[in-house]
Length: 202
Image (cartoon, rainbow, N blue to C red; front, top):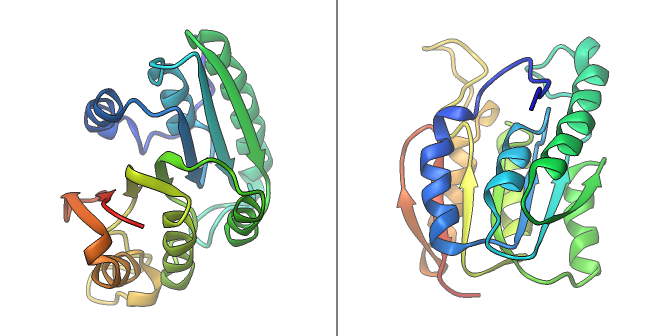
């Protein structure tokens, strides 16, 4: 398949993701920050353990502070194209819900719809600590017990080394979330560039 990807921040994680997918066999997946759909298309192709696979992709496609906003319309077009290819390539039925809005609004809407609990959640939206923390808290309540949540860019900073602003990084938010929810989760792997947790209780 001729996917349209202009960047690759994901393929290095595929082996770990595939191991988790094969272990928990997710049928319902949500990601915050879809960009061109590389992670979503991977999940669409890999999650073939059930007849139907549901995925929720949340993104404004406006870009964050680190993106060149002039290119974001092309990025969304690539997402649409890539997800159509992934659905055609998948062995099962793919049910995509594209939510083009800010993550807090999208997550609250999913709460209000009382959707079935999710098996797998990927948080890779805003890299600003307050946004990451809010996404984590709202998304965790949508995750089933035993489900997996992954935080991307755990060690990312917007500024150069020696000039980092902690608020311009996911790390302080992820650390705060894990510390507050430590009795409800287990850290599977970390601290690496991605942080992996499993939900233990509501």
